[in-house]
Length: 493
Image (cartoon, rainbow, N blue to C red; front, top):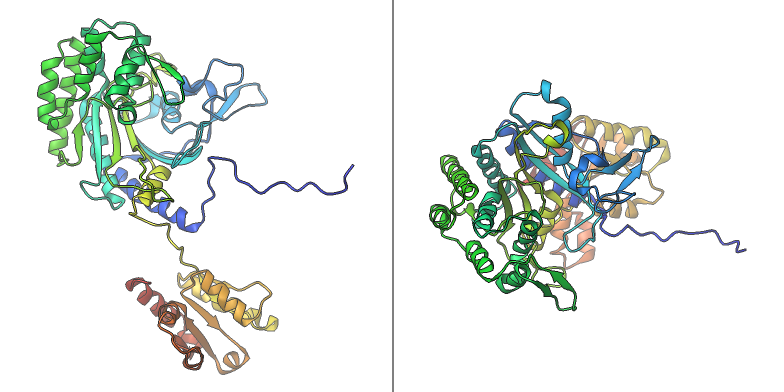
């Protein structure tokens, strides 16, 4: 038996990302911007727990003894299965059903937080990520769907995107259902197969979807995917339907001409009401358009569906072109809450994939992870003067300026390097001479960083000590506040 102690390999599980301050600040900025949009529309915040009973997750509960396919699940001590929430909508459905009698109706809420999916990770696709949702529960009006779309457009622009950088694509599940009814396709399983084929249009193109609508498709690896089993005329009707794109009003006219079923006509009417509401809210066709190819992957959507796609060129770490797909989406799900109540309660919502949006914006070159601004660092020269150092840090904090006393064991030079690595705006130097004289020396580190790129003579640099000043102790806070204010106005190299 070996006496060598076991040392686990330090590694993060696949699909679970470590995030430092800069990445967190980017996500928090997105959350803050989108949350303010939701609040302006009158939505109230709600937070639900990370776990839900597995049977409350609907279609995400697989037919197996251990419900951990697609979700992360565990069995509680009462033998009930719980799962980390897959999204924020299923917890809302449970909450609304549980509290329906006491809620204002319609109930308008927004929520944000981590969700977990037990799926294969990939570029920009994580097993844990942040979502930010808004939902209206209790309104069957298509105008409630339009409001979600308008908020999504405003939320995207609040993150810094401009018109033309994104597209909100809108469809209605009733349209494709109506088309299939007209074509004589009544089997629910076959309809689902059609939806799954249509959902791959962006990735596989028209020819690939044609195969999946029919008998099936073999991919490059030789793997075969069974098709929906439609025949020639029905396949071509679906493909022609998917390629209708003529602006919002033009698309409505074209859809009305090809759909003759009652359900299809209802879908066209709902889109017309969405169009009118979007027009009233000033949402143009350069922000939101109708696209019959949008179906959304989740099975609980019953009417309008919508997705947010970035229209920006993106590259990965190696410079190769990459497509992220949607960075948000939603739709109408009128049957989800009925699973709990037995009574239909209409609902609609939109969800931003915050982590995904941040990753996509980064790949598009629209943002970088912030180099998080560090605190002012009070240099610790002498253990006997720690009281003075902590008093200086406390005074800065009381003035709203982040500050810390260096608590390592290094000398002056390493402490200055530490402050620089923290991107501290300034360092406070209080040696014995300063304390005796009632003064403090302040090193403007931002100015020092800016000037260091222009240094030609290191000896002259040390002699001149640029960005360094000595002020009376009582002026320390004001002097550092001035440094921070100047730093916030001037771009740094």
